[in-house]
Structures are given as C-alpha cells and as structure tokens.
Image (tube, rainbow, N blue to C red; front, side):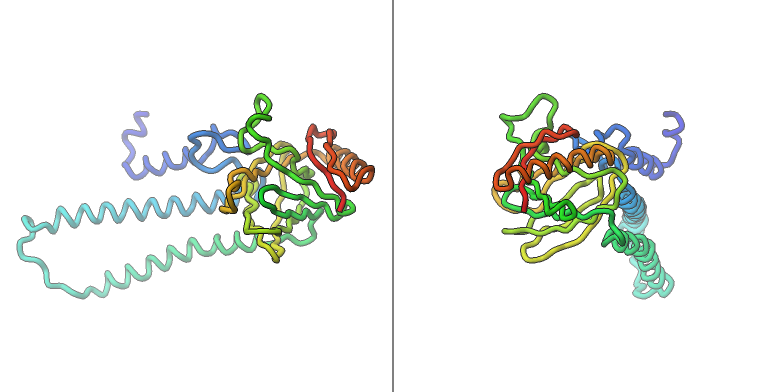
Length: 287
C-alpha cells in the first residue's frame, strides 16, 4: 500500500482499472450481483475481445486524464486574474498538425486490432459441427443438422420451479449441449421478431433476424455451463430468454446425442423429457 501511495495518480487509476478487469473474483461463466468487468473467458474468442477492450480502456483513460489536466492548466494559467490581456493568436501550425495527426494515430492503433478481431469472429473454415439456432417469442430452438435434423426447445425455468442452487432467469429446461474443443458453426435465424444470441463468456453475439441466416462460431475450452441471454428487446418476455450452453467431453456428448435421437425416434410427434448422461433435462423433437 505504501508503494501505491507513491505512484502518480494516473498510474494508480490504471492499476485499479486493471485489477477490476482481471475478474479474479468473478463467478465463472455467469454474471453475479455487483460484478465489475467482463466475465472470465471460456475460449480464445472471448480472450481476444477482452484484450481489445482493455487496450481501448487504457487509451481512453489516458486521453481523459490528459484532457482533464489540460483544462485545469488552462483555467489556472489563463484566467482573467493572471492573464488580464488575452492573446490575439488565432493560428498555430504546430498545434494544428499535432491535434490532427495524434488522433489519427490513435484511431489506427485501435482500428488494426479491431478489424483483425472482426474478421476472426466472422466465420470459421472447416467447422467440426453446425448448430442451427432459431429464436421464438420467447424460447430458443437448437437444431443439430448432422444428427438427423434433431432439434431441442429450450425454455426458461420459472421462479417457482427453481431448485436450490439454480440461477434465477438463467436456468433452462434444456441446455444446449456441445463437445469441448470443437469448432462449432452457429447459424442464427428467427421466426417472428429480432432476437439476439448472446453468451458473454464465450464471446458470442449475433442477431437472429426473420428471413435471414447469420453465421458465427465458437469453441469451448473447458467443460461447464456457460450462461447468456437474449439482449435484444424482443417483447414482453425479452428478459426470459436465457441461454445455457453445457460443454461436455466427447464421450458424454455422444451418449447424450444417442439418447436424444432415440427419444425423438421413439415418439417423433411428441415432446419428450430427456434425462441424459450429462444431467440435462429438456424437450426433444424430430424435424
């Protein structure tokens, strides 16, 4: 603490911002009350997004400190008491060149990693699997086209049905089950209004628009449950369209997929509640 007191105010502010962004105390894969900063990264996509965010935060913090200090200096140095006869200078070539060139250089520093990240997030070549995400008012439908057009419907668990330890407004009756370490292409669509498929810890954010199919992708580095929500205002139950992605090992995924396909084939016209190897329960239908 003594070392911190000796540091300049600007450096102390930057260190505080970095500590808040580190997310060391954040609840993994889900938001928590009064959380500051982004959720911990669940894959390389999110890590790159966080890195760009931190870079821009440092830049705007330095700009804010510089402009604030400049304003204070001008008010002190050029007030009416200390400067009763104001200058009539209306042009300074050096200053005008600097305030044009420096902002351009700052924008270039921000633009290069930004464009690189945009192209990296756009689409992935040679995905290991594809998932079709269809948004409804107000639930999600996840299709597995490589599994015989298997589809599952995912709805929020209401408050009165929550079990101890489950997260309010985030738990669903049927999680989106995916294998760990695979490149997963996601195709989003909607049957009614604009929705948004948003999973913060996995770096996934894509609109689901009626009449359009939009592509994105993701990977998941570690097994676990990763929560998200629709963040597009889509109607009265907008806040009740959570997303729960359950990442499992290859063997667990194959076991779940086999049970889901078997249940759907046994009764293709009926919704069936699954109790699979991953512990996920939900509704499966065959399309």
